[in-house]
Image 1 (cartoon, helix red, strand yellow):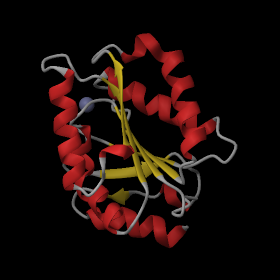
Image 2 (cartoon, protein in one colour):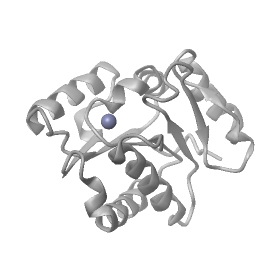
Image 3 (cartoon, helix red, strand yellow):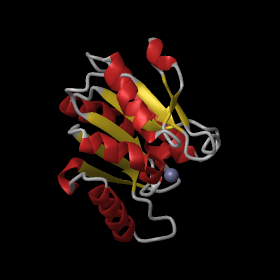
Image 4 (cartoon, helix red, strand yellow):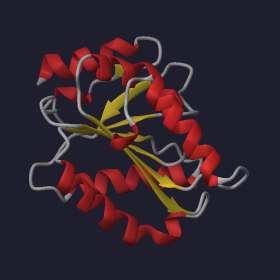
Length: 178
Ligand SMILES: [Zn+2]
């Protein structure tokens, strides 16, 4: 069960993945949640890392989340899997420090390897926590037209939660079930 008194942690593969969660991030920030965000790769495959970080920082500012809440790692865009063990360990430690009530990660969609790995790393790190936070996955492409998220938790939260069309719903659902 999510604990909404604790921070909500978002784990993204690249700068711009946050766009799929924009409304949800803003709603949560407006509701006073402590939001933390980690981007695993530098996103620098086609555009310099500083540019992409600047864009994501601006996106988050628009959503009401200050840069102190944002963490940019610098694993290579397209090659995160090469650092799998290190990233899982680092994420496990970050979660231990943050103590999230729930985790939102990009979905494993059998597409972009960084996305699939980011999802795996989030689930693995969450499962290593003493107090295991539920992990929600949100697709960025395969199911983006219907935009649902589901939880890896086996609780009633496993039901599908709409985030794109009904961005306010996932947050109220988390609230209702906490
Ligand atoms: Zn991405």
